[in-house]
Length: 216
Image (tube, rainbow, N blue to C red; front, top):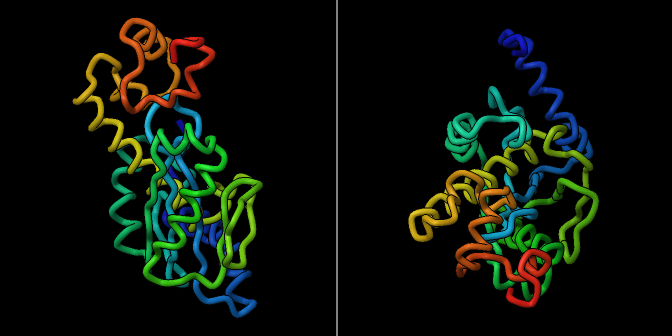
């Protein structure tokens, strides 16, 4: 188990995650939105994206790429992020739309939707990954940005928590699939349930073609 950082070490770590935002502010850019998505890979449910604008010198202890955090820690940070942010937005694109336009385009649609729904229009957008389409606001992509930028890390947490909450709620409606355990990802238990019961309304049919053949 890694050693717990001292307060000074944690502040230094978070300050390093703010470097991208600080360099942009040094260029006179005021409102910077970090954007990330959650749920590109699962067999079921929507893809979510979030956008977050922080005030200058924002500090959130423990913030990191959502994949490096426990579910409990993500839930704790969700409230801290939404209380600290100048503006945030969460946007989802459902499984029917994913089947219609494919997951890559649906992800871009979710990211654009999150940015466009911010109550403050950003001057600049930084996006996790290496591609985006139809983003009209000045922007750049940052590979592994959820580990390098406080704004993108925050967006990754909001998107992940929001999607997990939705899928957990769907577990009550469709208990035979065990969504609360795998969150829609293609685990052995999940694929076995699909083969036994067939797909439910929130499954992505285009993701099941290989598993079910023409039956999907």
